[in-house]
Length: 296
Image (cartoon, rainbow, N blue to C red; front, side, top):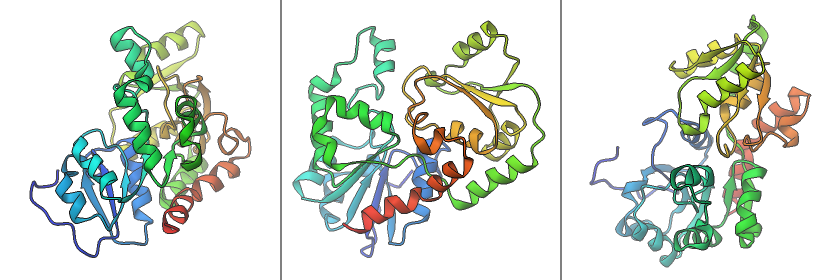
């Protein structure tokens, strides 16, 4: 984590704010954020959310701010972004208008349907996002879910999707061309509640699908292991906005068994039987983001 005392260089042009970066944790959001940063052509500074204090904002109000997963940020810092008239955009990886960042987890935890969009927290998030230059969503399914509650966000909403580096996309093609697939289906082992290992195993058993669990491996080893399977069964327990695992499996040639909670599954770039459509879209993801930001 960033030390308590630090100075953001004066030549910084863009500040990315996140709870964690890829150097802290290898997660889907962190990998997408890092891929975006790697293609930035401006001076970029990574700021951990907990360090988003009013003083830091005021000292750097001339910078462009990009907020990723900002759950650990002080409310006062976010308020200062607005009061200082800072230019900022948001990359929304989940559902921060909900106190649990998921309406499904909200219900699992409280046994009550999520109504956070009607409460102070949800209304504040909507106002904060409305003030943003742009809100980048991971999928059309996620964006539409937001717009159902907050139609006022329509004008500044964009679809980004998950992002990879060119090197990673090339790696998937190599694995696709060299893999010797077995006849088993892969199911993700462990993970958070949303990955639903037990429920997915139950589904496989009911449908007599021969499967193996895969997980608890370093990222590179995990990808190589995944490439060995016939297909991937992925049935998340709640909305998964644009799961990288599913896209990686498709790029490596695996068959897919998905449920309705995979929110990008019906987008043309992904559902197309022509894999080049998927690759072309992903190759252009980072440039779509920076073209929009560089116009600000």
